Length: 488
View 1 (cartoon, rainbow, N blue to C red):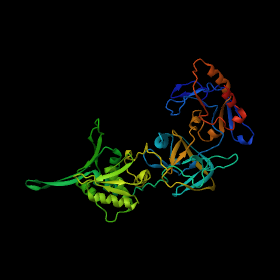
View 2: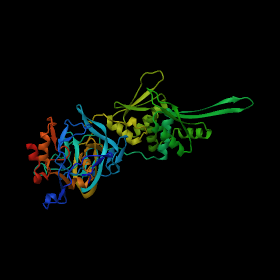
View 3: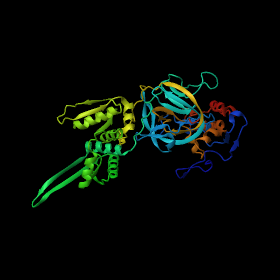
View 4: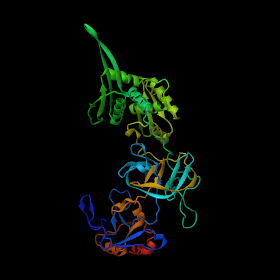
């Protein structure tokens, strides 16, 4: 372990512990399968990292690792809300991925971006939590969800040693509920996307001119110019699947008040005719075509800011097509007339964040910035009351992560995670089984604290105890470090 020769970022650091480490195991039932590493710490009052938002600067943690075996974990196919506004199965997340968590700001808890710090799995008895909107959550009994009454474990008791806040029938979880499935990238979806994008924001035209003594000449032009390169790349790739090759070029450079714009184009007659065919209105559009069309027209003409989803256009035919596609998937909307001379109409989606996310997941537009929800408050309007909590009857492999906010969005509800597990990797131990079973005990903590408090450089500030792992975990009953620490 990196105890006597610790390196961080390539620079050698002072060792955390001395080299006289004693490893112990105990035969008592509560410590079966656990190892305790008794170490002499080099320091016990630790400064909290400057980027932390906690309201104190100093902390004492006499233990590293935790013997409670409170493993917060969920089924690997649980959908997690990622930073690009899409979802990904919990099992596919990796350290460093950006996802959504939450943070309390002012009077509200709001969605914020956070980073995956650790990822691990365990095999545990699994429980199925059913919510009134049909959301099903499969998790371990120790897992915690945020409710309108605070954080609650999946299972627990009202009495005895297992007494703890836990889910019961009628308790309401916070979030929006289950995520919609992403669309399949079928041929119809690609055609629909191209129709929405090109009709919404591209130039597609042809004209002829007279040539003296010869037949008339013809010019064919297709051009699509956007500041968001994701939509350019998707359109370019989809056209290529239908045999249309385009040229990409810089349409305009970045300016102080404007982003750079990238464009694709072609002047080939065969390409022009193929594009014209692709963007024709189908007589009987499939569901996949409708999803692709909504994604394309939203990328071309849509916006989503300050919680308002809009698509604007002057073409009545396009406005009608958008409305029919939205109705097909049960979206409610209004058409507004801003009263401008050009006859523009604005379609506005109703239903708040839940419907905006359902739209994004159902049709999957390409432009990420339009899907951002950072800063949006979490409200309890969704039908997320607990209907039942039942054991599955199986021990399943369950997964969990550590994030910078201590939580994440799982199948549309706010889910807790163990924020401390990453600290074990700093000792070359893993964040999963090692965190639960290999406990570091700073046996000299009270004596070391006495010396550190007596130093002239210590000016006397608040010290928070057990901010990383519980100082009163099971091992405290044997080592009894806290009475000495509190006395000092």
